Amino acid sequence: MHVIDAVLLPPPSSSSDVNNNLELTITPNPVVDKLKIDMTNSDLFAEILEIVNIQGRSLLLYTNISLTEHIDVSQLPSGIYLLKVGSKEGMTVRKFIKQ
Image (cartoon, rainbow, N blue to C red; front, top):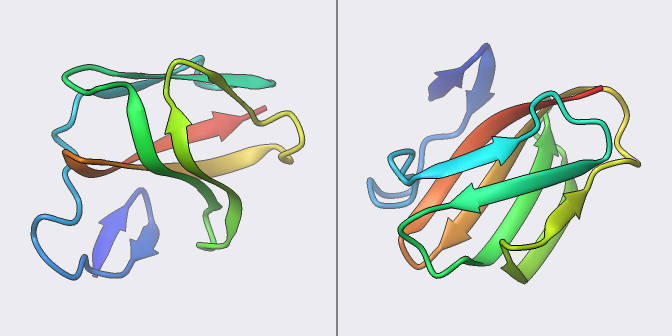
């Protein structure tokens, strides 16, 4: 298992499944309503974008989404979340805080 800030995640099924070396930033962090995702070295397109809470429950799931758009997180309660972004370059995970 992998530990990220005291959150247990199952191991990836292969070493190429998670690539946290992808250039991905999320702003603002902490966020109130709109989350902006910047992914360099990419075609600005995500095959999958998922937001999960720290218990691992999927709260928002988008497929085939443009990363040039802002993601509305205003309906999420305050807390710590993981953003999972999958593209042709691989999967990356980032933590963010919702105020």
